Image 1: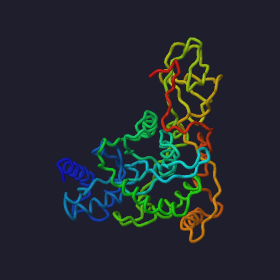
Image 2: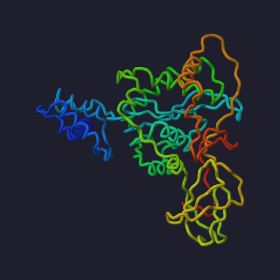
Image 3: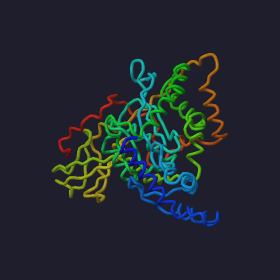
Image 4: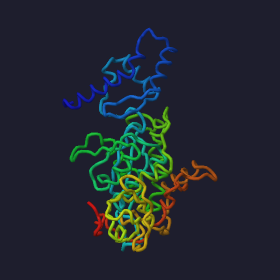
Length: 403
């Protein structure tokens, strides 16, 4: 262990001791210790990373037992691990197989945007996308939060889908601490790499053998596999199913639909022309004449460029009225492919059995969370308007754009 790893382990051990110190006296009765632990679980603590958080009773009990057994050494982590669910999510993009796509000749390479919970190893959410860009990563994060709650820390790499202003804004609105890995520094991302290997060896291998009809089928089967297989298996390191470890003693904090909608709006700055107009992606909008010459902030849903809210120094300044609209959807919004029928293959259909088990788990007449539109983004999974497949977001060459 290098000096930095040693210092980090010592820092974590001392922090954990500071949390449990009131509960370790041998003179305490079980009832007295239980009351103290309950009080400790109700408090908030500032972690070594500077994050304010609380800890479940089961976590504090585990730390007390570890200290009573091995002293301060029992509180030192072997390798770094979050101490509770939703403390740290790790995000990545896995390049997958070629999948039939109706808008191109042949197929497109599928990219899996996936999030894993560091503590429980839960596959929080994942979705196969046609493009590797800003909005693709945001769509997966938004669905993950709506289903699993807010993470305190989001740990991602420096790739284009994650190193951008729009993700930084979303995290700021939601109070998520966004952390980017240093180039060529894999520390903290080993769990993600192991999950990626598991996905390749288990899911992708089976899908390639089975045959992939289209992106819709790929995503439906991946969702079923994630819940019925990946999150239900006994994990080799924790010795417990990820979903069981994630839910134990933990109540996720899920933001309101209105907060989510605001967090995942995009923000751009423009200068208002002498004719009281602003330009965005070659679209023209009329704004309040009182804003002429001022630099304003535009907030909008990239799936709907007909609605632009204008803010002047953070104050609501009304709605930009569209009068020249050539593009209704931002080119960086991933486009869902319409389904393409495929003939079933003979033999045992393993993934079909997984999907059937998933449907049975949902229950007769029940609704999957994917089928419930959240206010503010009802068109989340609908096919998008046709546009370029470029993975690079085009520059907005508007004359009045402000860098």
